[in-house]
Amino acid sequence: MIAAALSSAKANARLAKPAALALGMVSAFALHFRPWEVAFLEEWPLAEYWADRGPGAFASHYFEWSLSRPLHLVPTEIGLALTGGAPGGIFFILGLVAAAQFALMLWAIRPITRSFWLGVAVSLSIALHPLWPGGFLQRFLPAQTAALALIIAMGFLIRWLQSGRRRSIVFAAITLILGLCVYPGPAVAAPLLAVVLAVLVRAPLRRRVAAVAVTTGVSALLTTYSLVITRLIAPGSGTYEASNFTATTLAGPRAAVRFIATTLVGEGTLVIAGLLAIAALGAVLALAGCIPHWAGWLMSGTALASPLCALVFFGNASWLQDIDRVGYAIALGLIPSLMVWPTVATRNRVRLQYAIAVLLVLTSVLGGVRGVQRWQPYIDLQHKLLSEIAPVVREAKGKEVVYVVDHTGTFGSQYTLPQHYINSASHVTNQDSSKVWLCYLATDPPLDSATLCDPSTNLSWRFIKSFDVAAGDVDVYIGRDASDE
Image: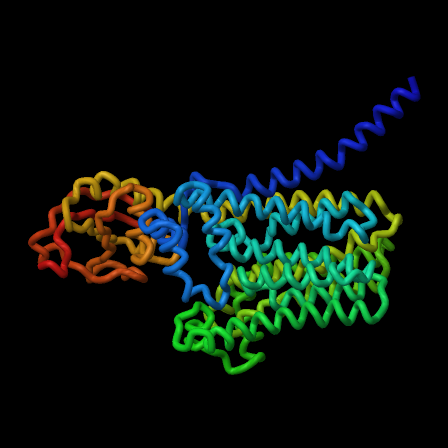
């Protein structure tokens, strides 16, 4: 009986780790895979262009724009290809990337981790990024893919430090290059990660120096390519980095730091609280004897330094004022901070460590759910507008335009269908090519991206319907294009 019980317990223990791996991957995938939302921002015109022109024309059209980050749209293209141009496919790739982040984070730290279960808690927190709601949006699929590349590169760097095999550091460099070609956001976080690994992993000084030098060199090389070399390849080209870098450059590093601090204080209260909590966790674990004191300093110091990872967006003041970009960079900076715990954990206060790990998992899941909910009011508004105009665009004939006259100031912002997205959103959702134009009256609250209009002076306009939003009424008309009148 006793032998049978022991055998059963061992079998259950063997199943526990694969079950945890599967549950973590499913959780990460499920929170990111939400195809019923269809699309939200840039995905509308991307899906429209793919559906109308095909993959070849899509790649050609965006070639010059993405030259400074040549693999930027590849994950999006894969998603669109899987669904024949439907933007829901982007969500599928986003879910796969999130699930891979969880699994490959466990793989990355496996050679040096001392507790599988602490590794699970940390890996799930990284995959669910509770301090960065933007990671649940399709627009940040390239950023998520670059984060995945950073995690894989970390795994190869650890193996280089341990074994000294050249192929490991070569694979780390290649992986990091590919990731930065998708999105350059990890260019500051990567050297920080390498420094933490060099301190954390026992290895000859030569290997530690090589890990930091290669990682820093790759980041510097790709930054130079993005900002300088692309201008030599295609002088006068409108690449994303080149056009934005020249738009509103900063006075210097101090100005960039001030912008980051202002953004965090103004919009990132939760982010500040989160990184301070992780810094405090490092101190608590060290004082409780759960990790060595030097590791506590390393964990806390890295967490407090994580906002500096946002310096990667130094090229444009508006980037440093975007909490989604700043939050992404901080989330990357917290990866090496959180990684310290499972890799140096002692056998002291094991119950306390597991209790904290459970709390970290619960906080991460709740933060992930909150991150998804953060965007739902905007998505609901988009869906309401698109469903309300669906019968109207079908009624419009030939070159007639559907005019949406918003008296409330609700639509037209970045998250509520600006003019440069509303056409594409209607075409993709309603499968109708009728032009949709957003405008407002002189007596209405102004809309960010719309123009003034006056139905009383446009004789071709005919009133079709009104619908309600929280702030009032929105009218819908059909009329001739203003350029034809």
